[in-house]
Image (cartoon, rainbow, N blue to C red; front, side, top):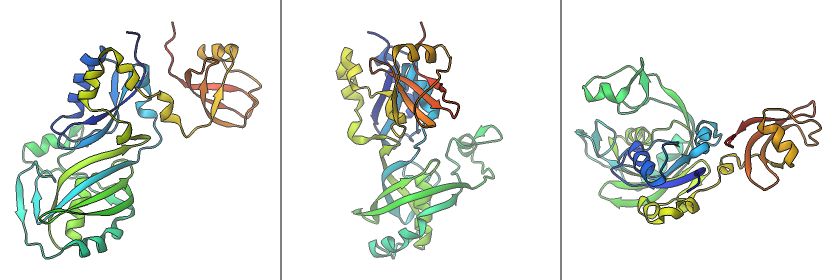
Length: 294
């Protein structure tokens, strides 16, 4: 099998960490050259983009960090982890329902400050918060800016439980948001379920379960999505063989003939080369290439 290169969108199962998924895929894909974006907690399911081969160099280059989730809020219960996998710290009577819930949701739209939860990978003094939390320690944290683009009520799904659709920006903790919604309703709350339906350009519709990936066997390459999907927001530019050769060698090419700006670069065979920029001096320069130089 030739070296794989692209994005494999995994539908992460419950009970697996994101690291568990990579460990499993290393054996399936016969490579250690893997990276993922957008870590999911073990209880969460859904879209986990895995970058395979040379594509892994693009993990930190994504510009679209928006995530979409379907979450279940449980009113009347608070846990130490902010979700139902934790220890219940407090219960409270629930005297509100879907009418009150729908009424408070608009308050949480837009930019806001959010305090990272203790059970998170955020580092304070170089130490992940979850390590301190497991020792029963509370660490002083600094609120971080987040943004909630959309917050939609989807309906009830159990006693004091309601489903919500959340479209949010980078760094948003859904379980913290649900706790804040509970407080706005005059009670406590925790997260009963979480499913990510979109991560940046990648959606649940284009994802594959681990069972599907295992069943693909030697045909697993057919499940990969082209790395150029990360840069779909950029216009495309196709280079001829001579230009592609110069770019691959780190040399600019003159008289670009295109407006100033960034581009997705393709070779004459249609293969994705990487990202480049046409400068005001007329030169096309490679910013980041995803081809293996022989």
